Each structure stands twice: as structure tokens, then as C-alpha cells.
Image 1: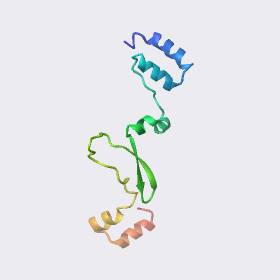
Image 2: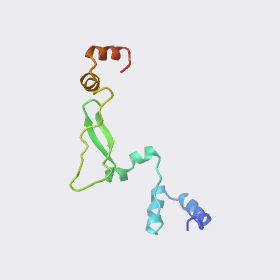
Image 3: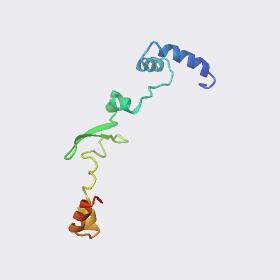
Length: 119
């Protein structure tokens, strides 16, 4: 139906967008039964209250980075099935666990690689 009414809708939208903010236009359009939403740029999306209220982002405390914003859970359940307590480890945080403990390299090799900028 939108394809058939494209010209009419374009004229209507253009006229009303010139006198209203995008948020006002969307609110009024939805009140009138027109399925519509604001299309934000990524920086606008992060500043919009709507995704924060819906839990799209969570704040966690990182020992290395301080307060960090992470994506929230994809599915919300009651009671919660998962919680975000820490962000992913920083680069190199597991080097000893992986290279020395799991792969059997010596701590000296690890130091040498680090000095040469390999890890």
C-alpha cells in the first residue's frame, strides 16, 4: 500500500516534517495509525532514552577501564537468566593462562615475545 501511495505520503511527510521535530512527527503518525519510527544515526541511538529504558545497554565496572557500557541481554526474562558483571577481558589478560599453562611455553618466552612486540 505504501508503494501505491508513495507520492501522496512523500508530499504529506515533507510538509509535516518541516514544521515538527522527528519525534513529534513519529508520535503523531503513530497516534493516527501510521507505522513509523525515528531512524537514528548510531550516535543518536546511544543518546536516546528509549533503548536505555528497554535495557539495550548496561553499565558495569571494569577494574582496568572503570565504568563501561555494554550491550544488554538480547532476551529479558523474569527472573533473569544471565547478568552482566564484567566486560570481556582486556587484550593479553589471559596470556599466561594460554601460552604458559595450556600451550607449555616458558614465562621467559612470553617475556621475549612481549619485548619484541609480538604479544
